[in-house]
Image 1: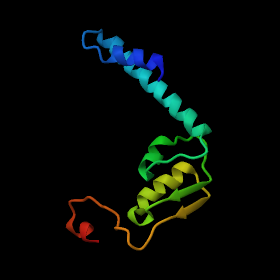
Image 2 (image 1 turned 120 degrees about the vertical axis):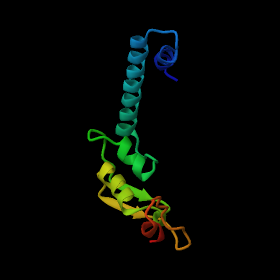
Image 3 (image 1 turned 45 degrees about the vertical axis):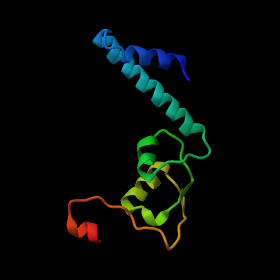
Image 4 (image 1 turned 60 degrees about the horizontal axis):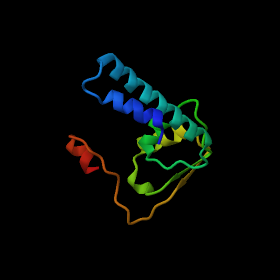
Length: 116
């Protein structure tokens, strides 16, 4: 726990507080969170995330990960996989899965797309 973040959350969540102070505290919380996330991405030897979250978590200035291991490979879509590969800037991809896995879940209003 970071005492400064706890203090800022109290300010941001205090409905009786000044609006500008609350907004400023919210901005500072986001900055602290981004700084911690960046530190983790630069120092962690392994990061476990979903394909889409990898794209959201890894920024241009975070460390590159040479290998992406994709578990439950049959359940991902190609666009989701590309998100993880480009975010990690990986040189290698290891796909793990088996023939009994379910196909990817695609949510769409398009009936033809749902059938494919």
